[in-house]
Image (cartoon, rainbow, N blue to C red; front, side, top):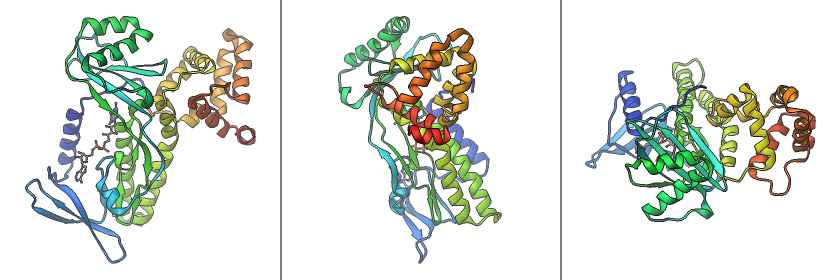
Length: 357
Ligand SMILES: Cc1cc2nc3c(=O)[nH]c(=O)nc-3n(C[C@H](O)[C@H](O)[C@H](O)COP(=O)(O)OP(=O)(O)OC[C@H]3O[C@@H](n4cnc5c(N)ncnc54)[C@H](O)[C@@H]3O)c2cc1C
């Protein structure tokens, strides 16, 4: 939980491909999935593809795995439906800077409806960007984007803004936006992993970690199903349940973050309280990094532990404010962040939680 890595995507893909080949996989680059081979009852038993020079390819398999991204062709071909879907919530500009001092930290800031972010990656470069709610986002010139991003830092971290001015952007500005959905992750003879099965806003920078963890779950299920230690359909169904259990809490948390709603006074107090408790501070960062589940973090026991930790130095005012927040919810301009926190807390309070919900 103490380290974050932000590898260059091209380099990471190379490492993964080399590891797969070393482990015995046969790699055929440049082949596109176009259709499926199925048996009479619709079970997928293979794929039809095409090489770059349009040569048709047919392969048989006991299970076809679609790791083909959020617009997955396999998902379309098998009709895997989406659920818990939510449209794009924000859009971001990002680019790469050279010459910024590297201290290995991931910095994200939420202020005045902007989410500024920066962290180091390969080759001495640092990613720098800002995400804005969809309604506030404008397609602008490169110079205007420099101003938009640097002024977002200026508002929250003037020293960093000054560093950005004194160093150089070495790439063009890029723009991205991602919808949010889960997709049915398996069916007869097929399974989906990575963004194909679960796509969420990149604001928590969790897509790659989620894809790897999903692949790990599927690998375990396939091992059981193909080795005969469990019937294959049961193993795939288990994978689907485990995938949902693994990601659902964080999915809601991410969607909530992605609205970039301003924090209420209560939330800011809550975050300050976390930072005064080493365990909770670490867990809060761990939650952002998908290592701690939101329902564990917002559990009654964890909140009580926080209150106990604060009691001597924080005074009784803390407890009262926290309890008021828990019982009444946040006032008026209640952002989704607070609602999710309330729901997650309430879900963990047993009968009292049901009453609050
Ligand atoms: C703007 C933006 C910012 C992001 N920031 C982060 C971040 O900071 N941290 C993070 O962890 N994640 C981030 N993500 C999410 C991350 O990129 C994805 O979660 C991750 O790439 C998912 O990996 P994947 O292998 O499932 O899918 P992809 O990376 O989409 O790979 C799918 C592959 O399938 C191939 N393919 C597609 N169709 C076919 C076909 N018919 N036949 C054969 N092959 C096919 C594609 O060519 C591609 O190589 C971001 C995403 C976006 C859009």
